[in-house]
Length: 204
Image (cartoon, rainbow, N blue to C red; front, side, top):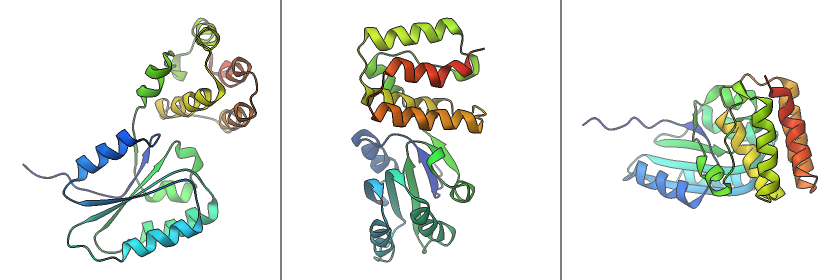
């Protein structure tokens, strides 16, 4: 059987121990090295570069997992993505493609992992933004209250909502509302009001 062709790509998913194990098993026997940081910094880029030039007889996969990565760091990584050292494959793991620069998005193909585990753990309904009714929205807001969903889990759900609806044609205003919602939830604002603010404009 022909082996899968391995290529550099962006993986949109929440990073977890389970995902790490799955990637190790998937790409075995190739070596995969993880660089995991909540906020990826220039010093981490230097560590990645050092790892690139450690000799290895097989294809080496470098997985970079982060929730936050500024424009300067992205531009530094972009140079690696455009001209990777021989035998090096990059996987950039982020919770949402919207934290990345358009230049980065244009250089690497994107893969999505549907993070249904988050919704199942919270026992919350999944929402399809292409077909959201006022009844579904009201039911969801009642779920938030009845299941006593906290703001941290609200942030996780909101990130997952973006992943699940990756094919939705988000406007600039839509994405602005998501950004404001992340900020408000981090400041412990009322979770129902925050989700109402984000979701009401999607109701058909």
